[in-house]
Image 1 (tube, rainbow, N blue to C red):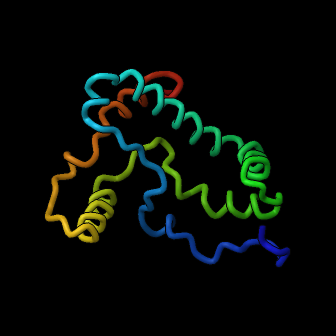
Image 2: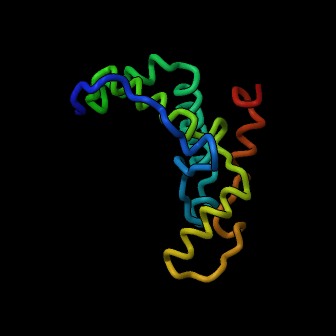
Length: 135
C-alpha cells in the first residue's frame, strides 16, 4: 500500500498517445480447433469483465479494494490511470498490434512472422456480432 501523499495525478497516459497491449488471450491451435466453444465462452466472460469495468466504475473500484487490498483512494487512482488502457471490445488496431509484435520478435531475436500467424480475431468478431455485445 502506498502512503497517503495526496491524490494520484495523471500527468501523461500512454494510451492517449499510442496503443498499449494490456489484455490478450493465448490459445494453441489444437484447442482452437477442438474446443472453439470453450474458447468463445472464455472470451465472452472476458468481454463481460471489460464491459463491467467500463460501465461500473464504483464496482470495479470496490473489487480492487477487496481483491487487491488497496485503499479506496489508491484504487480510484489506479482505475482512472488504467481504464483507457483497456480495449473497449477486446480488439486492437492491426497497425498498433504489428508494432507490438515486431518489438517482441526483435527482443526474441526472431525474424519476421506474419501477423496472421500471431493473432486471429475471428472468434472475437463472431462474439461481437452476438447479443449482448452487438447492441
